[in-house]
Structures are given as structure tokens and as C-alpha cells.
Image 1 (cartoon, rainbow, N blue to C red):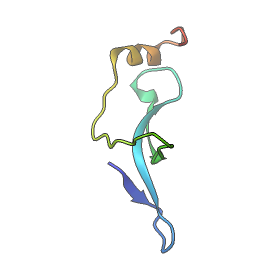
Image 2 (image 1 turned 60 degrees about the vertical axis):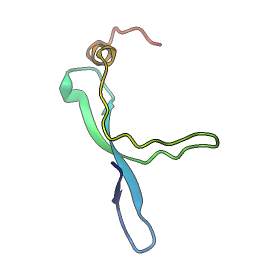
Image 3 (image 1 turned 135 degrees about the vertical axis):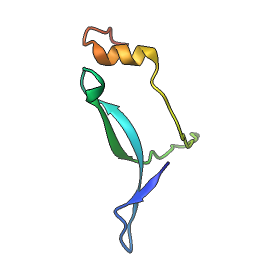
Image 4 (image 1 turned 90 degrees about the vertical axis):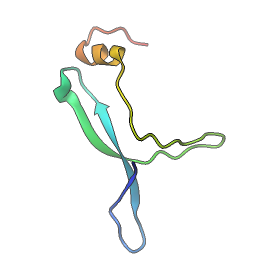
Length: 70
């Protein structure tokens, strides 16, 4: 769920919580980060996601640097 941070009288930033993988390894490489809310472009729709998961192939990709690209 979006949160508002950095509030001042004239400016606030709405952020979302995300899990980011930037390197290979076990569960310890999953980083929980705050990112700015995405902004939809022309003809696009933005949906609020209250829960999400990680599929089986993603867990193998995270564990192995030998996973094929694409």
C-alpha cells in the first residue's frame, strides 16, 4: 500500500514498498526497499497490488548465475 514520506508544506513523495534482487544468492540478497510510485504513461493503467508472490523460476534465477538470459 502506498505511503507518503518526506512531507513538507509544499512537497510530499508517495512511495511503495518493493522487494529488489540485485545480486545472486540466498534469501539474504532480497532487499526490501521504498521506491517512488510508478506513473502510468498515455494509454496505460496503474493498479494497486496489496499482495504479491515470487514464482518458482524466479527463485532458481536468484540462486544461480548460470541461468540463461531471456
